[in-house]
Every structure is written in structure tokens, then in C-alpha cells.
Amino acid sequence: MEHKYKVLLIGSGGREHALADVISKSISLESLKVFPGNGGFASELLLGADEISISDKTKFLEYLNVSKTNLVVVGPEDPLVNGIADWCAEVGIPCFGPSAYCAQVEGSKHFAKEMMKRAKVPTASFAVFTDHESAWSYAQKEMLPLVVKADGLAAGKGVTVAFELKEVKRALDEIFLESKFGQSGNKVVIESFLEGEEASLFVITDGDRYMCLPAAQDHKRAYDGDIGPNTGGMGAYAPAPIVTDTVLSKVKKQIIEPMLDDFRRSGHPYKGLLYVGLMITKDGDPNVVEFNCRFGDPETQCVLRLLDEDILPLFYAAATGNLPERNLKLKSGSSAVVVLAAKGYPDAPEKGMVLEIPANEGNVVVYHAGTKKDNASLVASGGRILGITSFGNTLKDAIQDCYAFLMKVKAPNTYYRKDIGRRAL
Ligand code: AMP
Ligand code: GLY
Image 1: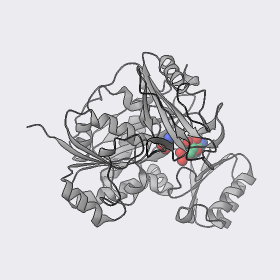
Image 2 (image 1 turned 180 degrees about the horizontal axis):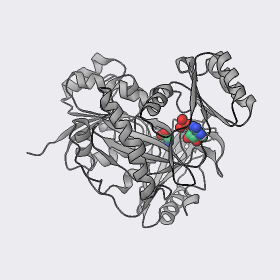
Image 3 (image 1 turned 30 degrees about the vertical axis):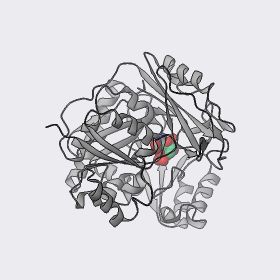
Image 4 (image 1 turned 180 degrees about the vertical axis):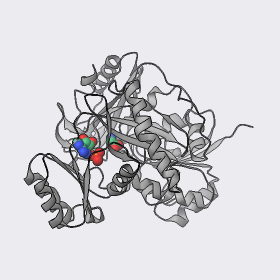
């Protein structure tokens, strides 16, 4: 008999809403539960804090036991860095997501850089410091621009690309003197600046074999023309034309394979999703900007729309070390996601706005992020509120669909970028 999955999905963003969408459509699904979810999920899918915890190991394992969950899929990085996959391993329940050891690839910039150095993976040169004085004295002797990174998780806010020394100083002050990033600020990585075009590549792996999803391009700055503060991501499209077959084969040989080998050699095979953040030079050479231990948000919302197969058995296969040796089945065409964010995002997003969202139509699928149900209404509860996705024969079609749909969304005190995907059109 074919395996049927009782899935627990962890997370509350647009990424998890998109993951839940593909998981729900799987013919291999027996049941799906989500914690904590958001206002876009049917309430019967959601678990409450009285039923489960992801910070209390005993309560978490008790839920897995009682519910007979046989596959855990983890969206965000925090629980992975805190060892949720290891908890699952202790009780023999497959988890799509890496162990705490492997999640350090995102949880510690220093860990990631040392590993890249050892595995000879192309990336920016770097130095590591644990005090303000030596970091500052090093920076003053280096060529600008420099990139200053708080070592640990900083919710996407720990990186400063500094074109002037005073920006380096400000970043070091924030990290060491003002403790802006708490524990993450005990250490700093200072990197040289990489030039080129960025792309995000998602790799599903069982530690040995791997499959790549189509590369996506994210738009990290808040406003049109790539200006304004850095955000979690304001929109994305896939496939990214910058990642040609030649670039992809370099990424596999120079980055993915050496990293997976190094994890294996360390006795900790990487299982789950490895997010490779790339900077591709004008000559088509890939460098690593960062690794994440999870799917990207909002890239996932568009990338998953290009799938032409049931991904759930592949999550299970990756979690159990049985990934098939083949490429993923993908649709031809392009997909896009445009993020609707609250006014004030990313610094001080407004909340509580009442939202009116028409039903999905044509190729458009809306994924919720910062929304919650409030009696009969749906209200904004976070910085990134919705991701409007579409799929089309061309990127232009997909993007036009997203913007046409946004005209019909009623969401006061919100904004979105008008230039998603423009570079690829
Ligand atoms: P990270 O959190 O490491 O992805 O950094 C956030 C953003 O900072 C990246 O998406 C890049 O746009 C930029 N960045 C990080 N490291 C570098 C680098 N070495 N050179 C140029 N830009 C970088
Ligand atoms: N969109 C960037 C990230 O998920 O880290």
C-alpha cells in the first residue's frame, strides 16, 4: 500500500501558506495540521498553543505521539536552529528540515564562512571579530565597500552593506555597543563586497542526492528601483534568466556538491532544504552571499507554482534519506509573486487594517502572511500581509495578472512594489 502522510507543518508566513497549498493537493496526504498558521488557513487545519509548542520539547513530542504525525515540515529557521529536527530524530519521526548542527549554516555566519573556506566554495573573503576595537581597526585598513554581518540570526536585519567608513562604525556600534541583535552580536563577520546579480536557489536534499528548484530572483528593498530599507522580500519571480544552465552546473559543482560532501564528512548529512543565496558575476561565475536552512519567503510562493509533480513524497524521501536520483518535474512558463505590505514596513508596520480580498481567479493564487481572522473580518497583523502569485506562459503574463488582481484588493494603509520582475522583462 502506498505511504500516506500525516503532516505537521510549522510556520506562519506566506511561505507556509504556499507549502500548505501544495501539500494539501498531494494524493499521498492523509491529514495536515499547521502551527501556528495565519488568517489564510481554514481554521480546522490550525493547532492552538494549548495543543502544541515548538519551544517546549516535551509538549512538542507529546503532540507528535498523540497525533501519530509521520512527517514534520518546518518552514522558518528559528525552530531548526533550536533543534526541532533533532527532537523528531530522537523519536524516529521524519522531519523535512536540517538538524541543529546543519542549521548553523544559517544560524552562524562564521560557521557558514569557515565551511565554505574548507570546502573551497566561492564566496567573499572575510574576517571574524568578537570585539569592537579589533573589528574597527581591521575595517579601517580594508577597501570599501565592506559588508558587516552580525554572526547569528537577526531576522534578516543583521547585515549592513557599507560604502563609507561611518556606516561600518555605525554597524559595529549597533552590534557590539548597543546589543541591537542580542546574542547574535557577540561576533561579527566582515566581508568584502561582491558585485553582480543576486538569485536564490532552493535545493531539496537527503544529504547525498539533491534536486534543484528553478532559481528565483527576490526584491529585497522596500521601494521601486531597489531603494529604501532592506526587507524580508517584496516580490519575486522564477525562473531567473540569470541562472542559465551553464551557471547552474557551476553552482552544482562548485557549491552544492562540496557543501553536501562537507556536511556528510562531518557526520551530519544535511536533510531538508538548502537555500543558496547567490551573487552571479557578469562573467557568469557564482559566489555565495548566504545560505539559509529553509525555503525563502517570498520566493517559495512563486517557485512552487512551477512544480509539475507531487512534492510531498519528495519531502518524505529527503527526510528519510531516499531521494530519487533525477530532476524535478517542472512546468514550462514563469511565475511571480508581489507582496502587499503594511504602511511602515519594515520598521513600524501598521496593523489592524480590515482587508477585503476577492477569491482567486484565473491563474492568480493569493497566499496570506500577516493576516488574522477577527470575528467575521480579516485584518492585517504583520508587516508582509499577502503574496499575490500567478503563473503564465511568459513572465509578463504572470506579473500582469498579479498587478491586475491587486487593483481589486481592498487594503487601506498598505503598499507594494510596482516593478517586480522588471529586470527580466
Ligand atoms: P544576507 O542576510 O547575508 O543575505 O545579506 C542580506 C543582503 O545583503 C544580501 O541579499 C545582499 O544583497 C547583501 N549582501 C550580503 N553580503 C554581501 C556581499 N558580500 N557583497 C554584496 N552584497 C552582500
Ligand atoms: N527572501 C529572502 C529570505 O527568505 O531569506
